[in-house]
Amino acid sequence: MRRFLLFVGALAAAGAVLLMAWSRNPRMGTRFTNEVLNPALVRRGGSGVGRSELGTLEHVGRRTGTRHLTPIHPVPTEDGFKIIVPLGTRSHWVQNVLAAGHCRLQLHDTVYDLDEPVLLAAGEMPDMPGPAGRALDRLGVEYLLLRRFAERPGALEAADEAPWIEQPESGEPVGAGA
Image (cartoon, rainbow, N blue to C red; front, side):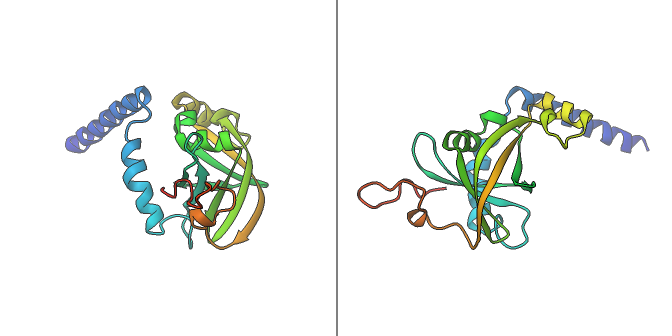
């Protein structure tokens, strides 16, 4: 019994240390996620297709015009989707979507055109219980609300087939990378 309590105490202490480190540097680990995990999920079909709970968000870089594909966990709402954003406005994909004002989402073999992005603190969400909202607010967690204005069956096109991504005069897509 003592070993078990010691083990649980060590896990709790490690969790507290990680939480404190994350609260000081919320972008800790994002480079690995953005350069290794996200491209692997998109490339291997782990997001956006079949019965996966993850969707693939297509957005355009606000400075470069580069097309990006980001795995996310969207939750359907009456008129669109809500997406949890642990980093809030420090998340680059959120900055891109807010700057562009629109994006596309592939979820369960359906592509949704989304616009009117609104970033809300967790405590401001209407369906968030009070204590949970306050706890998430303290951690800086926010939600991105997006309105659905069109949908079609299928998949996201390749960058050179996406009509809403600007094409330079040479005909090459502006940044087809993820």
